[in-house]
Image (tube, rainbow, N blue to C red; front, side, top):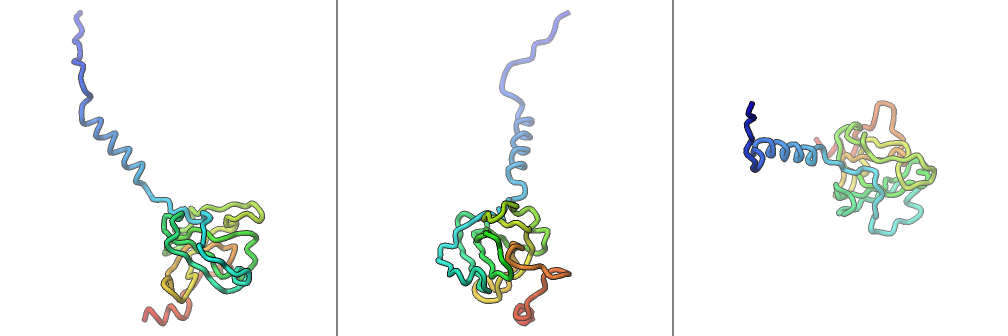
Length: 154
């Protein structure tokens, strides 16, 4: 019996094209916003503001994919958590894949993130962002629009 020899040459363009398309799909899947990554505010923050109601937002923060670094005004002791990368959100589920760590006094968020309004003034006024729950307490039923934001939208 004679076997037919296959010609040697470049692979068919169809499988190579499909491989390239598959690799592109893996690379361009859901972008990781790296919410919760430590970041630099680029400004001196007074010790009183970390335990007070002053929110500090820096943009552009080049270490954050969203370019937004946030240190929320604290309603409670944050236990070493510092400024963190944030991103715009619509619901708490948009913040679910944020970076967290349970290390005591570490710089990362320990209690997860909620989608809230960190400020009602300035260029980021009334924009919902992922906020570390080490700084704020999420009320039963979730965060609601601050009264000043409701007035702006009407």
